[in-house]
Figure 1 (cartoon, helix red, strand yellow):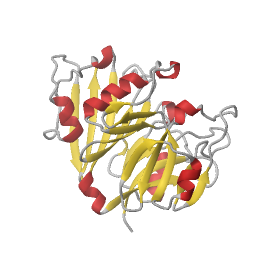
Figure 2 (cartoon, rainbow, N blue to C red):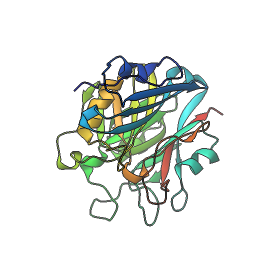
Figure 3 (cartoon, rainbow, N blue to C red):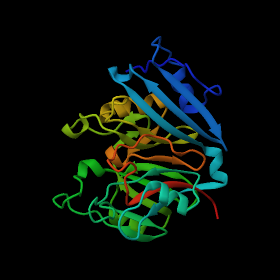
Figure 4 (spheres, rainbow, N blue to C red):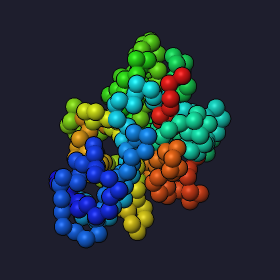
Length: 280
């Protein structure tokens, strides 16, 4: 499916993911792409009423690969209960952040496997337990290696990651959406409804933190098939879904929260988040 967007308001000529969208121009009057850059991180906000025949507001933080000479991705997590993504980011003096994986809303803590610095943080709980997820929803893994490489891949096994010492952190999430520039997640009932979405994607030369807004008059959100089409339009070679809905939160040090969270309290407390931080 083609993305039909017309550039209306822009502070600089778009680059990277935004350029991929702007090059596919439409003629609708209510569409815009705003593209700005600060300290090498490229911020893009897309507003359109024609993408998938729906209203969409999408926020993207694009991290060029060259930044990983001085920065790295980290998984921040709560020791007890849940905390806002912005809190976890500010505590670590992060440059950018997006909410992480699935968690127990009532008691706090992740409900999927995660590890950091070779220490287990959480284990996957069985799907029959409240707040735990079916296997099809958590079929992917976010891996950041000790040599500063982001790998988005189908989840292997808890034993595999426990036995390996190559990872700086591992977070199980999903569904896994894009692999080698092709759709990965199979057709299933859970993919059909539109909701806010958080995604982590890789292009040939950047990492994308993506918040797709929804549940409002301005933004309908997307189903997983639409998310996949959109990610491919952005040029993602690999991509994974994070916890979405009211949890969707995208944050930068310069701008604060840059998307439009829909939780009834505003920003929803979460169990973990993916951060961009300076190397120590």
